[in-house]
Image 1 (tube, rainbow, N blue to C red):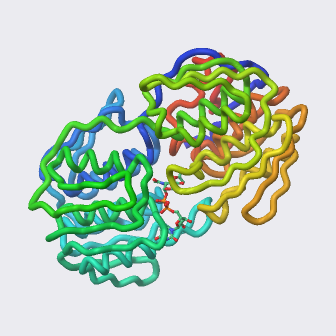
Image 2 (spheres, rainbow, N blue to C red):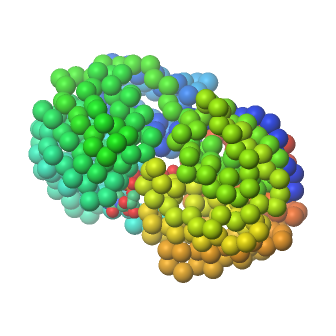
Length: 418
Ligand code: EPU
C-alpha cells in the first residue's frame, strides 16, 4: 500500500458532536471468542480497523466466513476446521494471542506462534501460559512456536499482575473447560466486562467480571448471538484530549462516562468544564489549560496507560508542569522525541516524564511511533502553529476509525494524502 500521511493545519478550535466507534480492545477478544461458538455471530458497532481485518483473516483461515459492512461483522461459523495459525498471521497484531485459550479449548491440540515484542517493548505472555498449564495444558515452546494440547479443566488461578490479555485468555479457555475456574487479581478493565457479557449472551456462565475475582463455570457448548460492541473509551479520551488542547466545546455521544472517570478528572484539573449525562460527555475548554500536577498510569480504574500519550500532548502548552509516571509498559514514551521536535519541553528519566508548558508548538513532520503515540501527535498538530505532517499511519489505523473524518466534522483542518 502507498505510504499515506495526515496533513494538519493547527490553531482551529473544535466544536460539535461525535459518536464513538466500537472498542478495538474489546472487539479483538470477541472475535477470538467466536472460535468457541457453534453458531453464527454478528458483532454490531464493529470498528473498521486494520487489527479487526487481521483478526477476521485468522477466523477465515480457521474455517469461518466473515463479512463486514456498515459497522456490522457477520461471522458464519460452520465449525473450526484448522488448529494452527500461521506465523505471519500471528505477527500481524499483538492481540492474536487471545486465540490461544479458545483454540486449545475448542480443538484439544493447536499450534500458534508468539506474537513477539512490539513498539511498547517486550510483551511477555508468561502469565497466559502459566494459567493454561494450571488448567491442564501441555505446552511446548520452540523458536517462537507454541504447541499446546490437553483437555482443559477449571482451576484456582492467581495472577501476579492484573493483566488484561491474560484475564481474557483464561476466561476464553475456561468457558468450555470442565468445572469451575476462579481468576484472582483479575484485570478490571471495562473490556473484561464486555467480553463476559458477550460470552454470557452465547450461553457461558460467568460472574464477577469487572471485579478482581472472575468466576467461570464451564458449559458444554456456546451458541451464537448478535452483540453490540462497547464504545471505545480510549477513542473517546483521544477526542476529549484533542478538544481540550485545541480549545472549543464538544459532545461525545454513545460513550460510557463511568469508564472514563480517571481521564475526565485530569481534564477537569486542567481547567476544562466536563459534564456527563447518561451516555454523553460534554467538554468545554478555554485556553490556556493548566497543568495537572501528577499523572500515574495504573490498571483500571486508575489512569489508563493508553491515555498517557494523549494527555501528554494536551499538556505541552498548559501553564505549569505535570509529572507523568508510566507503570504499565517499559517503553511507552516514544512519542516524546517528536513532541520535543515540535517545541515541547519534556524531560525523561526512566519511568518518569516531566512536561513544562511552553507558549507554542510548531508544525513539522512527525511520525506515529505506535498507536497512541500517533494519536498524541495528531493532538499536538491541532495545537501547533503552521502545518504538521504525520507519517507511518499504519499504527494509527490499527485503532482509529477514520480519525481525520471525525476531527474534520469538529472543524479541524486535516487531510489524508496518499
Ligand atoms: N505482562 C507480563 N506477562 C504476561 C502478560 C502481561 O509481564 O503474561 C505485562 C506486560 O508486559 C505489561 C503489563 O503486564 O507490562 C500489562 O499488560 P496487559 O497484559 O495488561 O496488556 P495487554 O493485554 O497486552 C491490553 C491492551 C493494551 C493496553 C493494555 C493495558 C489489547 C489488545 N491491548 O494489552 O492496549 O495498553 O491492555 O491496559 O487489549 C492500545 O490499545 O494501544 C494498547 C496497547
